[in-house]
Image (tube, rainbow, N blue to C red; front, side):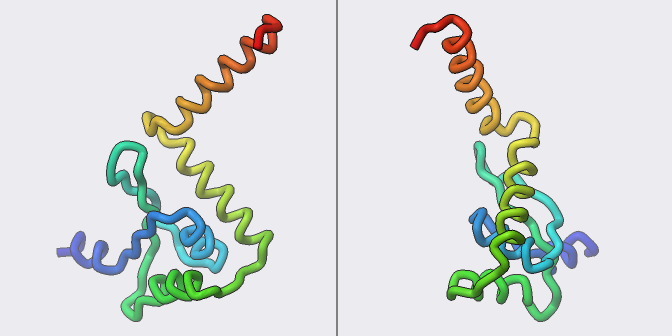
Length: 109
């Protein structure tokens, strides 16, 4: 029963900009949940009144936030995404960067 209550009071967001807005406006991030290959949703605490969902809707309606807070939140969420083991995203970038570095060292293009 407790698990159902926890999931009932949770808001999930798949869009990074909306999640960054929520984080920048002090909504509590619970973590990530994988929903498919290289697909995640951000899990936020939700109260009984649905204020987190309302905040997400306000962002989509044009609400504003301090740019520095938004950028910091977006950076934190990206770090969280790329730090997950076996998520596939960082590995692709690592391989590409490794190849580029090898080309620079050998002088090949």
